[in-house]
Length: 611
Ligand code: G6P
Image (tube, rainbow, N blue to C red; front, side, top):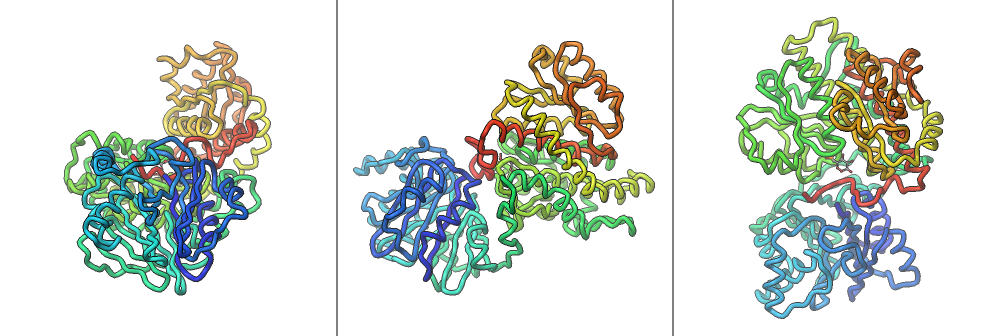
């Protein structure tokens, strides 16, 4: 949550920062601001999106070769001009942006008020900034030293970027818990919450670690720990292309990302799944294959859509590997003193690799001796680096706030891991193993077929867009798909939607069924198909409207439903990757029909770096 950008070098900083902020808006978009250094410090900030700030700044003095910018997702203090970042210190000499939460800010604020400080905003950021200035003035030290001292007294999570009028070409940066990437150019440096603001300028980046402080000048990057010892920056090469973060002719990133899925699933399988050699190659898993096979249990830890991927994986791992699996919300797991035995295997699932709860949950489990495997999309992210091993999902940058292609790529990776372990362990026979390898390899083309339903789904969206509530039902492997369909609808169209196991409907939700309630039933052919069909009849008997996702050719089920969406038949283990696609499209087209900003739904942020 919150995107941060910085630049120092020969270019004008403002255009670099504004473009970077637009790319980081997925991280929060309720207010935005920039600070530019050009002898004097100029701070412009405003409630609203980056484009609104840009419009408001036409004609203003935007000159400066060093600057910082921020796009906010409010934590402390409502979205407003005054709470927007950057904040300025009492003296007016320092400006700071912050992504994270300072937990002990109330105490710090009171101490500063007692010393005569007055605050303009309600933010924890302004408190930290004045705390730093107070230390700088009291100790007569450099800003760098003051930041170091201050951060030792701060609890919480942060990335901060600071400008100081006394050092006009320098940005001081520090991180704990929230991401920070520094791009290295020719006599210039770029800073960002991720690498997207710097893609057209450099491919060389440094991922700053927790408890590190960076002193960034045009021609110099110094990294230090909080003990003031220098650290050699580890420079990595980026392999993301600019095209990957542009809309490429689609109306929205979400639609583009839904349509990328045949390719992203293919990219995820490529080089790993070999249907001819009948092998799955995943080096980051192979290293831990023995421990996974011997594990008493596997715990999947995730949030949001990634948690739904974990639920599908629970069914797959238990079925194929005969290992007990638990699926945990990271936010609950981290605070409930869970029993962890050395040798427990934790699989952390995360698109961004930066979700604060997931990150802390795995750090805790790691400290207790668990083996941590990451199933992560963003290369070099915090969760990827904290994990012992794992596998990247290779879905490419996902920018739409509602996750789509990351989900199907997570399922592809998790299915491959389960198949590999089951094969090693001997809990799957060769015939089924080979069958599933082939089924997996056919998923990209079946997803491509499902995408051809887009016009039909757009018409359905028009038909149902005014419903007040939706129910989503599924059984077995399709139950988490129902949850994911409901989540997509909530996120994008602000329609209340609940996902339920189809049979559980009788224990409550059936009371809601009437002629006005659309019920989306995921009823593709699987072992429980006849059971789901009974549930459809129960809904019809109460005059509910059934929209069913069924397998091609299933005319018997089609005849019972109000509307059907037919997807290619697939083995139940891989079916969720296909059956979720029409639900993504349905949510998308309902959101568009209601004229909502589907890429940036209200109150949400893509990367939840605060707990
Ligand atoms: C946010 C996003 C969701 C995502 C969840 C977990 O809520 O809006 O789309 O599923 O975070 O994020 P992660 O990056 O850990 O998968």
